[in-house]
Length: 308
Ligand SMILES: NC(=O)C1=CN([C@@H]2O[C@H](COP(=O)(O)OP(=O)(O)OC[C@H]3O[C@@H](n4cnc5c(N)ncnc54)[C@H](O)[C@@H]3O)[C@@H](O)[C@H]2O)C=CC1
Ligand SMILES: O=C([O-])CC(=O)C(=O)O
Image: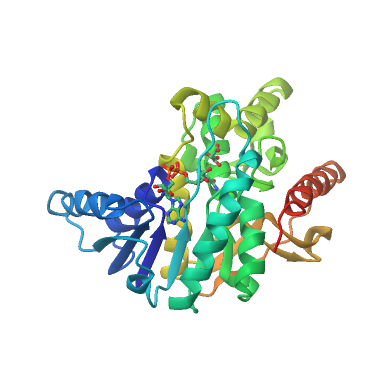
């Protein structure tokens, strides 16, 4: 298997590192526009292979799309990250051009790849990739919900004093500070609803912390996060390459599901060798349905800014 990661910055390099350590692919290409940057990071990661004992070959390149040819999966992380005080949406001006150009270049050499979009504002960048590439909808996946759900589990585990691995919890909707929907009423601690253990105040605290999880880290670090984003992206790559059929919330093209069309937004999907293979219909309450519709309106407003 061959995987390309575009953008050798914080998220792209971390994702590459995760893929290599798990030996998900024989060949891993890291591409960046900045001269020598991806080459340097790739050599640094390859120099961990003797210590960590992985066999993946990582090769860095500067904008050489020929070396990405015939990738099974391509991850797009190229683009600016936000700074403290910014929203993800403010990145659209710069990142739309970058994501569009990268998609066109990738398609020339890997027309059969599954593309995972990470660059922000992610739902709109996923929609842009869908429209630019003309690829079947199942082969375009936006990464946001996997990360947001991991953060949700972290905050729940802090409140419950339990292992995050024992929790089942999902975040759907847009990947934005005000658009994501942590589904606390559906969350369970080894099958027991978490609402049984948490007061209303605690539930609200966890939901709010999850929604601004990215902004909190951006304020602390000075740029946005990368460890959990890199791991969340690698989890999707793993489910594709190993055909795991993992159920993960991802931003995908909706055609009537959840009452929405002509949009990419986070819903639970089964991820396997063909990309996203099935959308799972959650039984949402009226409040959750209203929150989803509001989130979709906000994502659609952002999509309207795009020009094709
Ligand atoms: N969807 C999600 O859950 C998350 C999304 N992000 C987004 O991912 C993106 C990357 O974040 P970081 O890695 O922290 O940023 P970064 O600045 O560390 O890395 C971005 C890299 O993209 C490269 N780049 C820019 N234009 C390019 C082009 N045309 N072709 C190839 N490479 C190009 C830059 O040279 C840089 O190395 C940002 O837009 C950020 O907002 C970050 C975390 C989570
Ligand atoms: O917060 C950001 O801008 C980056 C991101 O999407 C996240 O970490 O959730």
